[in-house]
Amino acid sequence: MDILLVEDNPADMRLIREALDEDGMGTTALHWSTSGESALDYLHARGDHAGRALPDLVLLDLNLPGLNGHEVLAEIKNDTALRRIPVVVLTSSAARNDVLAAYDAHANAYIVKPDSYDSVLTLVGSLRRYWRDTVLLPSRAA
Image 1: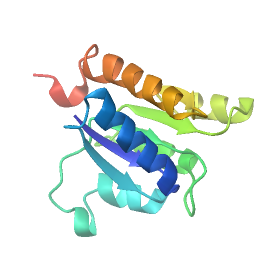
Image 2: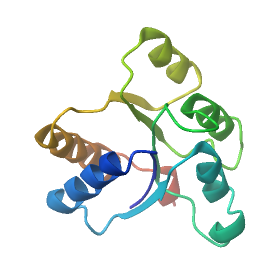
Image 3: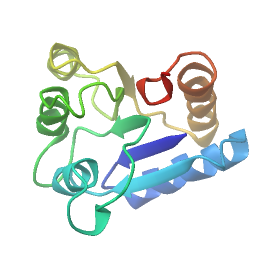
């Protein structure tokens, strides 16, 4: 499974990577973008990302430098080549307007970042069970 994590905080990225490894998803290819612009470069295979495959799943923070997560989500879901990629918003905001705006822009899920490593591990297990073990992702459809 290929995951694009769009997260500007290196500590949060490390926690997710460690939880993926501990959960047994260590074989998951985790690609990391630290800004909205770099995430879109990755998704559109621009620059250093030429020739890459699309990710199976995007984990998207809303609070990013430059283009924010809402803008990135809107671009993904308005692009016919990208819109089928599931996008899970993973952010610190529980604000009603952020939640509603994300779902209005067709986010596939909205998760408030956990506050402990054990909670991150539980979250990663949930992501694995649902997105890898249960659903048939567009990238794997025959």
